[in-house]
Image (tube, rainbow, N blue to C red):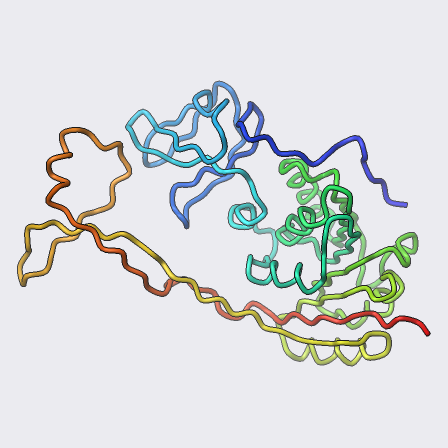
Length: 309
């Protein structure tokens, strides 16, 4: 049986400590994962930030640089980690991930199998969903990719609920020692129909399976293979449209043509010198579709294992 380290527990501290992983948030599209280290500094366009100033502050704090610029220090949640992790492969994003976890009915205590660890984006969310008493066994055929994912799970504190294995699932199927133990399973493989028979052996009766495929031809072949042992077969495509909501400041002084002049954003501490000037500035809240909205990512095919008579 694959090892499960019960000596570690998934925990979360509200105060930042030396050695913690934090997400340094500059704006919605500019974030970076940083390990806090006493004596180190973080530099960006807003100045130099001392790590020593971060230690002891609660996650979510707003901290200032030597130039009065600021950033926010956020906890490394799966949602944020998905946005900052190293892309070793194409990853699933929040819309698909949340849909997968809901339709696979994953709750704390579940045992989940995943084939195609990749960059670990989905795995991170699966681990949080099953914690603290469940477990995720994830497999990748690429040894270096699996090693990198293992390091990431150590870094994010999820190693106690995630076991990474190196195995060609598409060619050899899942390990026999996991037979009949899985509550749910996720497949991200080029030919998932080759693994359906092995998947059926791993799942508990009434267990759920999801297969992610970018092409509809893959979906068709997978559905044909699923009909033998599975029921309630459904395929979805999740399309998400995001909006940008911003506050636009308009000076009371009208520019040419009667339109108010727009002030550039500023990430510095407000001073008393500018307090009088701000009385002449009005602001408007504007919302518009994001220019970077993602389109098609792939198809999600779900199925439920038939219960034996």
